[in-house]
Image (cartoon, rainbow, N blue to C red; front, top):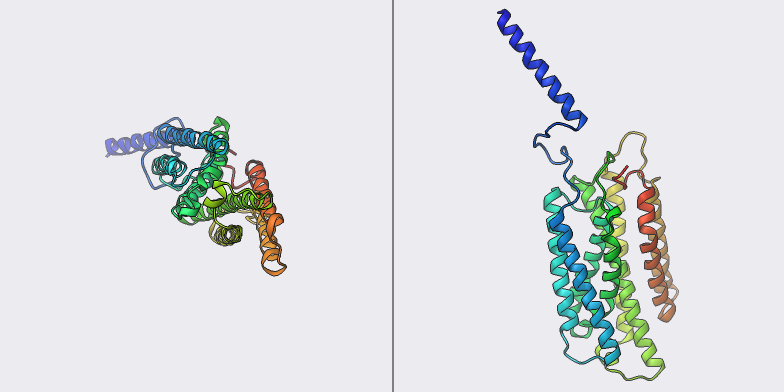
Length: 316
């Protein structure tokens, strides 16, 4: 009997010491439910896939500069083909990171930026299936390359801290919908740049090859509007799901977080822009410029608000 008591005490001491070691982060972490073990942040295959996509985006940008100088030719599939290759590599990067982390890759600035760029690339591929929008890659490649290079900065992909991470279904859906919304706003800016190009050709009476390849400005204006509507719907759904279903520590307010407040300001700006267009006949050149300026504001302030956020910055 004494032997059994001593054996039980020894087992208890070993288990207790193992738990204390694991809590300190120096012992092995046993596999368990999703989210209990902190996954490795730097997933090299994913970053290599993304780097390859950024390189192809860069090649597309250089080709865009080349054909702008040389002149556009009909039935050229090169811009669309380069965009499709880059999109495939980009998708591989997103899937590799997602499978490695076992949740939607939207936790830090690198992942969120890559997700927004992936949305813009996807939209460009879908719209590019229409022959009159086949040259959409000429306008999107510079944006995708420049922002992609910035996303590759090591400081944007740090290790996770102890803040809530988007690892369950609702929180992942909340973040993904918002990123899709930002991607739609990016597409509206791309369509706006095409609109301004066509308008300039009309005003200067330049019957260039590009003028004949791109859609009429009336259809481009509709494309801007459709992209803005889609972005607002996605942003509204993402914010609503976050406010209702996101689990936060006691005393933390979702609606007072700096990132959420900024997202609400973005929502109000785009809603006002749409209202001005649909109800007060705000259109044409000013409408296109406002769509571009709004997305530039989104991009320039996106990273700063993430760093200030108490619930959307996993490094804290």
